[in-house]
Image (cartoon, rainbow, N blue to C red; front, side, top):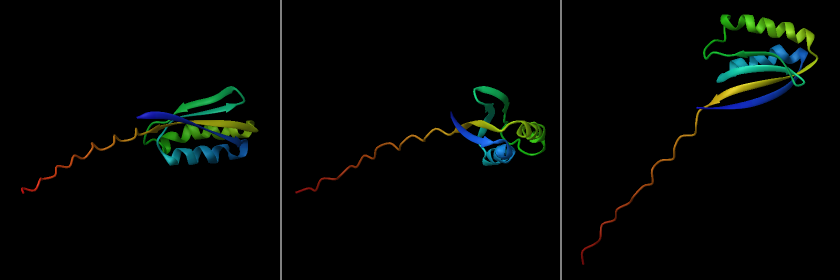
Length: 98
């Protein structure tokens, strides 16, 4: 598995909605919320933990949304490595007897 990063610029009003959408998309390892170059909050996301256990993090994001006007959400995702190509096929032809 390899990790990739995505960034989204959002306003404070859209922050909580967008974080919820990202969590429901799955394969998220970490979410970082920044205002300019300053990291405001960073939290890891455990696989399968989206329901009640994510509520405290979402409450914190909701409180931040009231304070921030514009921010960037950075998302670390885990991507599965591309599968190896199948081995080459070797064809054996039978020679005709003359």
